[in-house]
Amino acid sequence: MKYYSTRHLSTEKASLSFGDVLFSPGYSKDGGLYVPEEIPKLGNEELVEWKDLSYRGIVKKILRLYTSPSELTDDDIEDLVSSSFQDFENPDEVVNMQQLEPNVFVAELFRGPTLAFKDLSLNILSKLLEFYLKKEKERRLTILVATSGDTGPAAAHSVANLKNLDLVLLYPLNRVSNVQELQMLTMDAPNIHVVAGEGTSDDLDVPVKELFCDTDYAVANHLGSLNSIQWGRVVLQTAHYIYVYLKCCSRIGRPVTIVVPTGAAGNVAAGVIVQTMGFPIKLVCSVTVNDIVARAHQNGDFSIVDVVQASLAPAMDIQAPYNVERVMYLASGGDSDAVRQAMDQFEKCGRTILPAVLLDALRRAISESVAVNDQQITDAIQKCYQRYHYVVCPHTATALHYVFNRITTSSRKGSEKAEEEEEVLVCLATAAPAKFADTIQSALVGVNPTNRRLEQMKMLHESNPRPAKHTLRRGDDWNAQLRQIIADI
Image 1 (cartoon, rainbow, N blue to C red):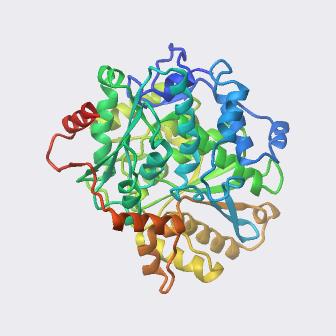
Image 2: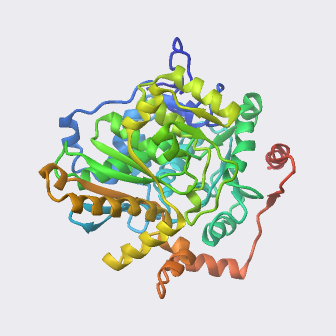
Image 3: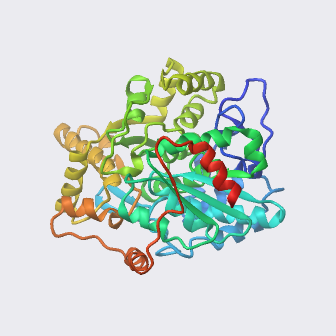
């Protein structure tokens, strides 16, 4: 399996290995994102064979499909995966399926150490990085991560204390939850360098991308990424889609609709890969009032607005969802020319109207999209608790808002078709409610979601409060400041 850019020339052949892409700055030289030369297709017989696989078993299959045996042997994959998820709530069942209705489920993807779905992929990705670093002992890596909330803590936890690896972690001041901030500030490891920025996560992405796209600098300083620009993270996220499908489908071959809380679109990009592999899943994107993904999907308006609004679901407050590029590439069958032209226009002007070939592809990959405001998030949290005595985080509530509307619409139509009756709806629960206790307490009087890990973290912070190591002030040269931070490591 070889890799190249989403913006590759039609005459260009894929030449990069999985390891090359794993240790790349994330963006290719032309500004695109890395993708494989082809997506492996599975027939119905193979899907049936996968039916009873554990989560670990699925991850092993994924790694075998997307890596070369000369890089990772079967024994290497076995060792890597078998040692993973040890710090999860239940290492043998890392995803819990909560059934709300006969055909409505919530996939709890937040049972990892930082209580967010990012733990699932980063737990494996960190072990892959460690494996390659041990194999090439002279190699070093400096990872840059700009987070909107959940990637930061998961990235820090996954690579803490790894040799020959440093993490420069940027987060937006006053735009993450208190818990998310404390998860980063209480990370006590010499290779973790936390940076607070006076802006949005999109603002922080700008200097990070500038450093990544300065190819000479990125190579000389061994820059890498754990954001969802990183192919390794996206491909590992395919595992939870496959697991969810196999757990919830009435029989292999029947479709399952998966509702995805969407920010930078890395999660939904993984879902599109799974579609392309042959799994019959329908994808629905739920977004906040920062609705660029919904606008792009509904009318082709891929444009940045002047202000990123702070919502109750901060990890989704993104106006430059870079993985839409991967989604368009994959859904269009690899139309790199159309993707390159659209993204060049978007990066130059901050907006573009998607051409028909990409808009049609986006609509084939994503069945529906819905923008959800704060009141609707609150209403969904309340309705879920009233109906099922079940608490969800505000990000998951955006998906449930869609599901509740779908249930209402279906009940009005009545049971017209047996096929409609069998539709299975799954919400991806991307974070634990306890990470957003203030929002939950405001929505549900008397309900205080707690978690043992978070209580221990709060006690640690109270006994030894620590600010971020560095702060990027609005108006300063963030590019130069980041270069200095990296130089000082």
